[in-house]
Each structure stands twice: as C-alpha cells, then as structure tokens.
Length: 363
Image 1 (cartoon, rainbow, N blue to C red):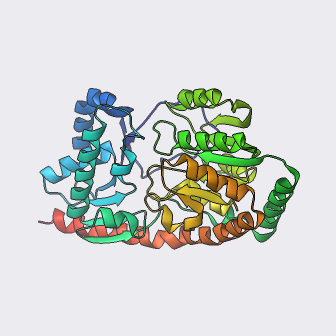
Image 2 (image 1 turned 135 degrees about the vertical axis):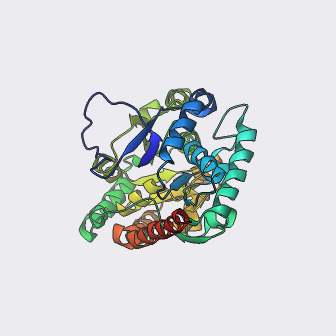
C-alpha cells in the first residue's frame, strides 16, 4: 500500500512506467506545494493516514517529508514499530537560500528535530548514504544503507562508447565549439541550486569560455530562472527543456552533453549524478550530504559559491586530461550502484521490518 501525493493525468505519457500492479494499492493524497497548501488539506491527510494504518502491516516511512512525518506521528501514538528510509537532510533542504518563506526558520528547526527522533526510535533504518546522513541523524536501532537508485547495468556505457565520448570532448576543446553542460533537477524549490549554476555559467561566458547550458526539470521557480537568464543576457546559451520522462529521454540528453553540474544546497545521494556518471560524463557537484561519497574534492565546491563553481567549470573546460580522467573514473564508480549490488541490502531491510512487525502484532 502506497501513501503518496497524486495528480490525475488525462492522457498517456510515453516512456512512463506504471507503478501499480496486482499487489500494489495506492491511497491517493491531494497534491500540495508548500506549507500553506499543506495546512489546507492537513485534516484530509490525517484521515487518510489513519486509514492506511488500520491493517497490522509493516510500515516504512520515507523522510524527510511532510507525508512521512504525518504518518510517523500516527504511528508513535499507538507505539507501533516502523522502518525508516532517510533520503536527505532537512536542515540543508530548508535553508534560507532554498526556501523563501516567513515560516522557513521554524520549519527548518522542526524538521531537523523530527528526523532526529524518527531515526532514534525506528525499529530499522536505511540511509541513502554510507555514513554522511548517519553522522547527523544517528540510528537508534539496526541500520543499513542503499541508494534509492537501481541502476540497470545496461545504462553504464561500454568501453567503445566511452572512447567516442572522450574523443568528442577533445575535438570540441580544440576547435572552440561550445562545451555542453547539463543540469537535471526540480525547480519546485531551489535546493538543487539552478540559480547558482546560471550565475556561474554567465560568469564563464563573460570571461570568453564557450559554453551551452541545458536545463532539465520544471516547477514554480522555472519562470524566475528564465528571467534570471534574460537579465544576465545569456539566453542564447541556455535551453530549458522542462520535465523529461525518467530513463531514456534523460540519458539521451546526458549523451549529448560533455559535463554534468549539480551544485545543490542539499542532497542525500543524488540519483542524477550517478546516472550521469554511468553515461561517462565528468561531473561537478557541491560538498553537501552524501555527495563526497561519490566525488573527489577537486570535482566539488562549497554550496552557494558562484565564484568557486565558475572557476571549477573553467578549469574543466580547459583541461582535456582532467575531463578524460573524470569520465573514466565515473563509469567505474557507477557500477557499484547496479541493481544486484543494492537489492540484497534492501531485501534485508524489508525482512527486518517484517520480523519486528510480526512480533509486535502477536503481543
């Protein structure tokens, strides 16, 4: 049974996989964005949450998040065991540069306190990082880790494709053809820092570096970001492609690009970075969350630092050897996130929750 926000879609979308099945039931929740919309539907959400918790089944909540936390409050009222999947840090995602609301300081402290308690009192915990989130939100129980990504081995480029990509970059850097940078992330909030990337790319272009920026994603801040591009007078160098279906459509954009940049203000372990690595893309990221588990220091910058990001992009765009080394390293590392490697840990986590819940139900 899945308790999640939903939207009705009137027409079929190509390349989108169905999430349902014979043994999958959805409890559709009214869609909402931000605290004010949440408050309007909160009474409905509580009623639905109680409906979800009626059967004595195992419960896993994914946090941080308003729905997971709402379910958690109902679970602790009846002292019911639960599993927890920790996928990010609310202290980072609700920072002042990511969320612009008068409630931001209160919401940030509240979400951090809740995640500390959720981790401490869970019956089993899983994190998307090996150690980063565990340090901030220590488990008070049995725990494991696995990424939320299940990478099909077929997604990882083979040696011949990688060599072709590297040769293309060498040709571009030697001929003055613009280097193609790709960004993929939500624009519903600014914690992926697309605004920082746009400023950094503008700075590079003003210094004479030939770049093209492809922006994948959509949300309420897209219009603001497009205006930012116009104000910086780099519109001819930036393309907004909107929200693409996951999988092949995104991989095609990665395959046409030369460098992937995600300067997030908050992350757990970013799926898009791992997928970009698998396609043989050099990557530049920020030092947040579990990202240092993926990247070396020389490929990272501190969040919100436009000058450092601009310098890092410029360095990569002028160094063929660095681009080649990063591409080879990334393909090799991405193999650690293939489905077979992670599924064993996930199955162990599910079985642990099952055992604890069965013992509870017999009391």
